[in-house]
Length: 362
Ligand SMILES: *Cc1c(COP(=O)(O)O)cnc(C)c1O
Image 1: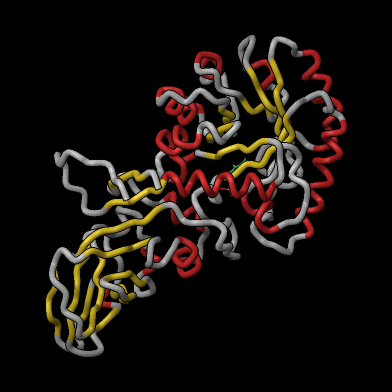
Image 2: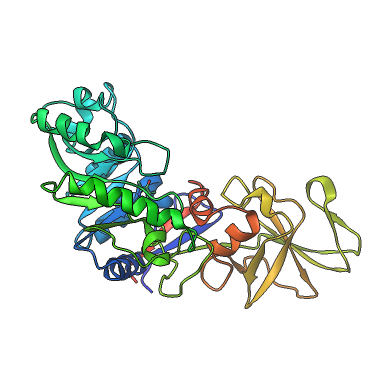
C-alpha cells in the first residue's frame, strides 16, 4: 500500500489510515443496491472525521451531490476545490444568507420564514418532516409550501427531501409509514427533479423504493448504521498506535483511576498513548480489546485522557510494538459501539484532531 510520505515536523501518538479506494467502492456498492439514478455523499462533521475535503475530492466523480450540516462545512469544501452541488442540512439565517450565495451552497428551506431569509438567486431544496421530528414542513402543509415556492421565483428549487427516524432498525413499520407520507408529498411537486429520503440504514435494511437519489454517510465509510452488520460494506479507517512502555506487575497490582482493575496474576502491562482525549470512550473502560502482534488483549482499568493500559499476561513485547485500536484486524466501530452502548456514527465522530490522518489510494 502506498501511504503518503510525511515530513516529520510533529509527532502524533496515533494515526488513522484512511483507504480512499474503499470509500469509493462502498459508495458505488450502496448506489447500486439502492438502484437510484443519483447518489448523495454525506460528509458532515469532517466526513465523520475521515477528512471531508480529501474524501470528497476522491469520490467527486462518483457522487452527484454532497451534504454537510452547516454553512462552515460547505465553505470548507468549496475552499478545498469541490465543484459538485452541496446541500446544507441545517437552517439558514440572516447571518448565513449571503454565504449560501457567495459559495454556491444549496440551502434547506424547512420553514416559511426561510423563503424571505435567502438572497435572490439562491438555490434550495425543501425539507419535509415525515416523522423525524427535527425540522421540515409538516406533510399537511405541502400545498401551502408549494404555493410559497411558486411565489418565490427569485429563488431556485432543485429538490425535495425527508429523513427516516427508524431506518437503523430492520423491523420498523414506521419506515413504511414515512415512505408513504413522502410519496404523497412528491405527487404535489412533480416538476421538481430531485426527491430523496433514504440514508444508509434504509438501503441496507429495507426493501423499499428510494425515490431518485440515496444519501449515504456511514455506509460509504464501511458501516451499516444499526446493529446489523453487512460484509459488503468495508470499513475504510484503521486507527493504529504503539506500545510506549511495558512493565512487569505483580498479582493484585491496581491499575488506573479508581483502581477498578487489579492484576489477576503476575504479568506484563503495556501503556498505550491514547485515551478519551483522542476518542476512546471512557465508557469502554475494562471492556475494550485491542489487537497486538496477532492477538486481542484486554484494556484494563479506567480509560484516562491520554493513555490506556493493556494487560498482556505472560507475553512480553518490546516498546514500539504496533497496536491496532480500531478497524483492520482489531475490533471495528460496530464492536466499539455495541460495547459502549452507542452508534457507529458517534464512535467515528469522537475521533479527535490529535489522531493524524494518513491517506492511501487503495
Ligand atoms: C447524517 C444524515 C444522513 C446520513 O446518514 P447515514 O446513517 O450516515 O447514512 C442522511 N441524511 C441526513 C439529513 C443526515 O443528517
